[in-house]
Length: 222
Image (tube, rainbow, N blue to C red):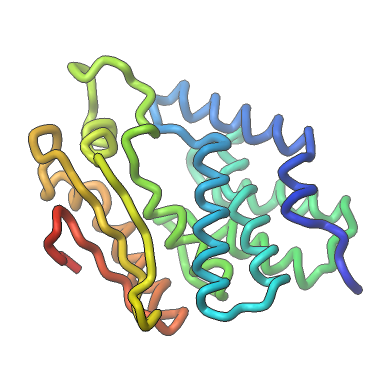
């Protein structure tokens, strides 16, 4: 059975827009960084680059982008266990759209395994989603306009002046290249909040048969 559910359709679905908007409003009320359309669209774009560069078929890439776009909708329920809540919500949405069960399984397993507290790279889509999500660190995700009241998450994200994710020339590695203003946050502070995420990226890259490398201010640290 071929599915008619596409990434374009998911992006244009008004109900899904409502879930994403309200999920982001919920995390904003709790003081978290931006988790709205800018984030999910960037994650979807990165998933596409990862899977396409590694030679996965067009439909797998499409499912990866769908999973990326939906991955944070569970925040509308609660930040805690939002990956699992989001997977259940995505199941209902996609099942109502008559997406085949095999495709639904691929999408919801990726969504349900993207949060660092319970994340596991179970398939190519979940591995790509973990890497794409955990490497989206950038100044524009910080909502707090008062630097004097920044917590460590605000400070570290705001300190990132440039963030690029790309493949090595031989495609054996995916590289996260960051430029950090160490006058705002130190490299040690970056690792204080992102070490577990970088370890997950390393494991996910290995699942895909490649390595994960991290450069900060021109020096390779992983």
